[in-house]
Length: 475
Image (cartoon, rainbow, N blue to C red; front, side):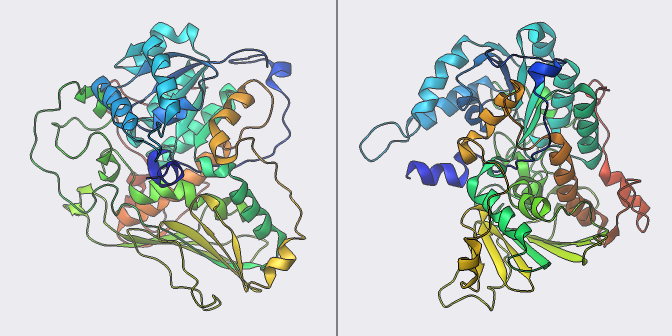
């Protein structure tokens, strides 16, 4: 594989957004975790054998002082496997990982992130979290309770209640927060948002979004296998974290946990942060009034499923006071919307994922991560050239998302995807899964975090926690 292809198809998870609020630099305000622009940031990682490794590779200009992971054998294996990838000339495909390895070797290592923060908290300014989804909120709130800036891989949380808890904690503590949906920092994605907001295709009446996940990436629609002995070196109890105590079962670790209801939030939670991000941002959608999810069979028993359905179609209806109501439909598992009738011969939708914005004058279509925005009819492209840039660009674009977070910590610029935004986007995504669990359309009262027409489905907005793994109270 070519390096660019590898990075674009999953070695580095990509997506993000740049909100541009009025920012008073932290060097003026001081406060929790205050750093001057000249300071080097001391960074810790939680979950560092997969995506966390790539996040930290983007931050090697700073001090990687401590790391926590539940399987250090897998971390070592990740370095070894990726070292085998070569360019056509035989050179390393990922030289940055060879540069990263000595940083890992020097860092203090832990199995339990809670002990790392307790013992090394004074040495740490900021924490990168790339664990399975079910641990995100506990890890982030623990770090924020220690006054640390936090970068959390998408999806931000496992439940709606957790998303709101992180939003409150970010506001209360003042630490700099970022969700790892790197495409929000991409130049193409920002241009797509500018074109939608400009009114070039007219008022938007409908949005269609899709992904091919989980097909070819992880299993869904399968039942839990028989219990087995955990792989050597895996601290299974720490992997479970806040989840219900249960024996280890194959097919979960290291990557396939995403499709298991115990640990991940499926294709919608995974890729919605990269794809739904753009219409949510461009159209300032807020919370939907109604959500319905149709799907293929769950894996395991319907009332207590093991894995998510192989394919789903989720429809969101937004009332939008002051604007026309809007319908947004999400397809996953390889399902896709029809090719637009406005498209010329040979036009194809990218099967990996994308978005169609249907307006009164035409369509705007872009690929996964906001890549390659294009207009239908093509005659609109001439008018697009006159649409001015209105959003700031992030240095490094999609590959500068982590560095943007560090510059924000140093008070140099606004952060791309703060929790004030990311928590709302995460809530939108998770409501699709709540509707799937409800088994019928849900009406959503966002102010009360309630589902008046199916009150029993409100249990899916939150969760219970194993003793010792409850959500910390922060702020």
